[in-house]
Length: 160
Image (tube, rainbow, N blue to C red; front, side, top):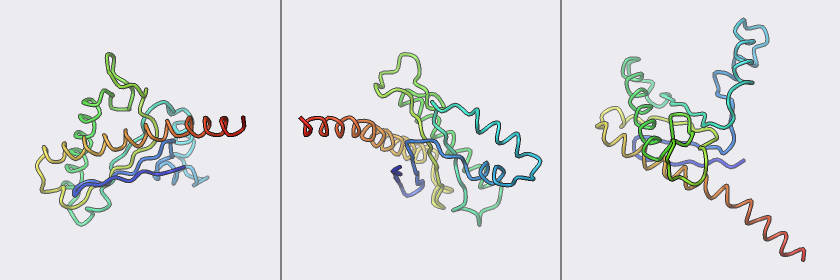
């Protein structure tokens, strides 16, 4: 399973074509005696597989106060949601009605890491970065989808 990494000065993204259980859920799932484990296991098992699982991490800006971290995370989430709408998807990666995208729903796992310069950037810069990175993710996804078809075609032609 290949991972795509894209970055700007403010944001880094990692994208997997397949869904990966988030670290917080993994922590509860592996703790067999934790009281919330059954609920997390149920939610993980019934989470839709035809959507994009994405999250924003503020680990890189931990020295900032909590209010700054949550504000910055909210700003990046809003920018990515807006970028997804601009690219023809809803907030979970499903195609919007009337969208011209030909690849179907955007699926997989996307982790977004905020870098310290993002705290002082204007929203327009963050929004531009989000849109650029989402375009790169979509290009990577399109390449991943088309690669297996090309490989199977090559294998079929060499066997003849």
